[in-house]
Every structure is written in structure tokens, then in C-alpha cells.
Image 1 (cartoon, helix red, strand yellow):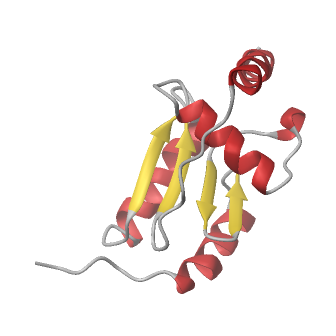
Image 2 (tube, rainbow, N blue to C red):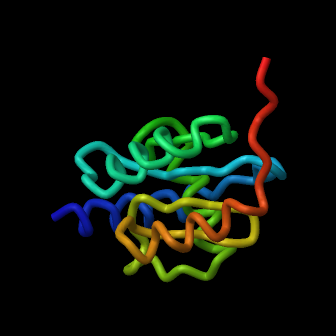
Length: 119
């Protein structure tokens, strides 16, 4: 049911138009949605080990966030029928879903990012 709803929402936002926002160089975007257990696990992991990084979580059911998700899906050529959450955008790389393999890829990709300055 969630995949059908997500697919329907994707189709609507494609018709309306995607996002033209530029990605910040040192920012990591995490697209999530309520009820997504993998999103919770990814968020907990990032907060535990990478809380000093510029990580912006975007709930795809709020505002224009679905449009942003679709923008990045097009950028990475992710087919709509396979698009899911969490989708973690890390510069020229992305991680979709959350498990051991996705965690390893996240750890590898985050090496290109810098922690925020502590004050």
C-alpha cells in the first residue's frame, strides 16, 4: 500500500514539476517519511556517529520535499518504481534503504564530507 501511495505521489509531483534547488557542497540530505522503520534506524545511526555533520532530514510528505526527492531521483536515474526511503543524498553518491550494506556505503561516502565547526 505504501508503494502505491508513494508511486501516486511521485506521479503527481512529476506533473507539477521538480525542485531546482542546488545541493549544498557539504550537506547530506536524508529523505524520509513517517512510519518508515529503516528511516528511524538510519537517523539513529547518523545522530549517534555523525551528529557534527551537516545532515538535513526532509520528510517527503511535507512542503516541496517530494519535489526535491524527485529531483535527486532523476539526477541519479533511479526508476520511480524502485524509489524508496530513506534516500540519502551525499554529493555525487546516494544510499537508498538502510541495512548493513547501506551503512557500509554511507560510511565510505561520508569520508568526503567535513564535520561542522564546533563553537
